[in-house]
Length: 395
Ligand SMILES: N[C@@H](CCC(=O)N[C@@H](CS)C(=O)NCC(=O)O)C(=O)O
Image (cartoon, rainbow, N blue to C red; front, side, top):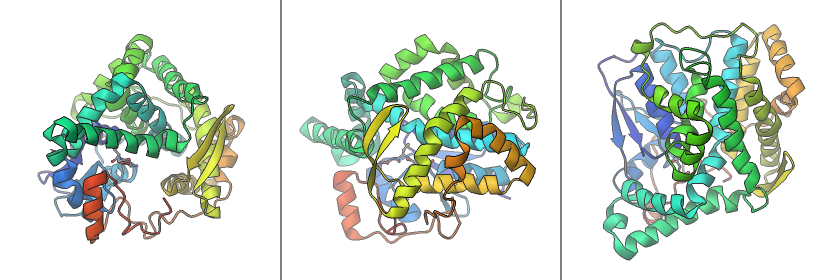
């Protein structure tokens, strides 16, 4: 077990979705860490060469190991810092909690990026913040240089996550509805109780916190919507940010063994109608070697969505957790998810392997030797992919 006094280094860009999630988790668990507000000019190569991806958050342990990806990182920390556990002990509710965390991580991503970059007001603000606080160095000197960097950042987000990933005028309403509906579902819960499982935050709270904190509650357009429509969610964001395990005391989650926790049904239904079928199609297209596919969901078409190897792995992990349950618990999960349409897309084509983490070591990373071209290219374009450890990744 890690020594209590030894500190972890947590590298973050504090406007970021997954960084906010990880920071809140580390604060809640009171895991000793130095938070490093990284800029790509100073830390980009270090992060890329140690993790294989230029993504944040990442962690350097006191033993000089590097960790990446919030979902396996939280499991890693749960083992080493077992006080105030965030995963409920009941295997069925535990699985549903993992499903909601993964859903919140991945399915809230598009609306988060959309609200940040779609309207001029949000975009203008974030072009500046990204240049000053993330790119740093040469790009942040001001004038036309910073203006150009802001344009490149915006283009990167558009091409990677928005118009380049299936967003059209026709499906915008659907992207907005994902945010609005989620607010409504969470609001109903937080009007009655402090966290998704009662008095203490769970993995699912940290999952939703990713989008709700740095994106939705801070970005101008989505912030206005949240303040007006879901004051209870707004309050929960601050409450979770300020939560510590010492203050909240012994964890007592409020649920009935083997039952869907109160208020969760509509959220699980969203995951079953949209996210799990998406994961399943994504996996099938990955197997065929496609780069993109047209995705129909809830009456909306997303043309040319990227095939995501990472999300093949998300599905594989969920399947792994499901398979680890006893037969009767698996049957119970089936009884819950099948009527919502989620069982088949979750369990079908279980043979499809992402090869995302072939050695099964996540969240641990291996040091990478960065090609010189990468260093030069990334410095100029902000591209974050390092085709070394994950060179097999079909992105
Ligand atoms: N699944 C990863 C995702 C990490 C991630 O996507 N980080 C974002 C910031 S929130 C990033 O670094 N994005 C850079 C990019 O994709 O260009 C996690 O949970 O940590």
